[in-house]
Image (tube, rainbow, N blue to C red):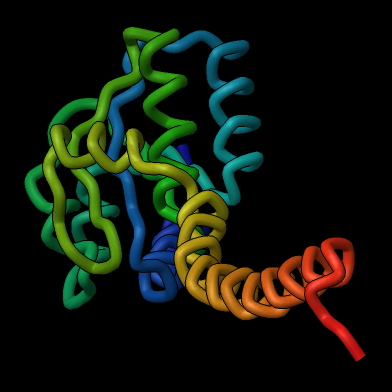
Length: 175
């Protein structure tokens, strides 16, 4: 059994973590083996997130007055929290992929950029392209008109050179 000081320390650490993040996924983990838990934690770390198993009442009290309060109130059963201050899509993808291979791992709720979302929205979020892919597409869209402009400007000079060359070859220019 934990001492009162240890419980207070756990509460303060959780509160501090919840104050700094805007992306939280509340999950259930009943009947997960030690190996499955190890793989889950590894998956979450590789997606840039953190993971903690919490007591429902501690999570409720730690979230009071924070954006995560909406998703951490009235929890039932065994609860864990995964959070990130980085890309929520990457973490949602990692958790969704893990949930597909481990049926004992379930979603309860989520908080994305400070807004509470349901389980369906977490699945939709996991289907979005990653931040890097979105940036690459955006850069392509921004860059495409400039490429077309340069090609068009270059085409005028190239076409003029072809006409002049054909005129020279056919002796159309006389001195």
